[in-house]
Length: 441
Ligand code: ATP
Ligand code: AMO
Image (cartoon, rainbow, N blue to C red):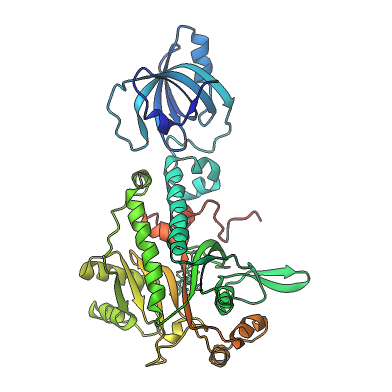
């Protein structure tokens, strides 16, 4: 049997070599009954093929093959007539002498050689869309991010955990929770691993992380919200200060930025979604919430101390970029009103909290902070937030056992991708997105 090469491996061969590869027919240009130019595409690369043959019925048969059909090609490598410019093209042309049809494709909703601009049509035909080089590159970048998350945390002795997605109570209070029928009782899909990851710290695991699904019944269509997304969560006992949590998340994100700018896939993604290199500082900028408010006020914006609207967050991102020359920064010390019940207050002024958000290009990608570890204080805070203890019994019992001081953070994987790469819509960053319109009626 002939050795089956990937087109990436083909790039390492030489002119005159015979090669065999499996690929999609990306495009055909039928020149005559004896001459056909083909474009072949596999996961990462494309190659131009020339089919010139005396037996015109063979050429005609190939010309009738649908785009996206899976074929096995044998041919010899030759110099391309023009220099190749695209990041995904091999440096050769292949003179084709054998075409074996492995599996034909049919009823294509669109042509990947010239895909439609409209998002919805592409998302509705996702498998075809995912075959496009831009998505092949994007999902390899996504895979890099989860790998770097695991690597940086495991290096620092974090333990990977998986917590239940069926929960007895809402994990982030809020209304956006999916209810499920749990053997006749009511349960909820986890809006975050928040309660379980904190309980694991009371169980003395010290430092933990999770990569898992997060469910939010966000009944609106925005470019930032999914009904199911992938959460990257950490939780850790802290020695002195919750800035130990910031340092961990910062280490991970910087490792991602460095790895990303080394990946050839970045250029491929940019052919579809143009973006400039992300700019970040060696020493990450940490602004306090009041400092952020002041920057907005100096810009003539009338903002309250309660919280920031998305619009003001984006404006603040622009102001930070102008003043500090960074696309990546941390906003620390959020007001208590804007944060969930488990958030630890600032020891000097309970109006503020030991909690932060992280922004990329003005968009929130992470929330985190120190948690209340004192059981009495936690119950009191829940009461003040108008919460009932129903369904929270196991969580509260974990605190009666004396939890260590701790903090953590949660990042949205799709948001990291969407804003770092300027996809401008989180739906592109997940393979099979869930939003209010996703499932059949
Ligand atoms: P997170 O839930 O992670 O905090 P978020 O972006 O939903 O992220 P919120 O604090 O809930 O942040 O809201 C910030 C702003 O986003 C709000 O001021 C609101 O204007 C807007 N917003 C939040 N949720 C929605 C939504 N489902 N649809 C439209 N706008 C929203
Ligand atoms: P929060 O609710 O801010 O915090 O969520 C954490 C991060 O998750 C992402 N995110 C989303 N991504 C896509 N679609 C959504 N609907 C969506 N909602 C949120 C954002 C956000 O920053 N338990 C806390 C985290 C913690 O303190 O550890 C929490 O869930 O990137």
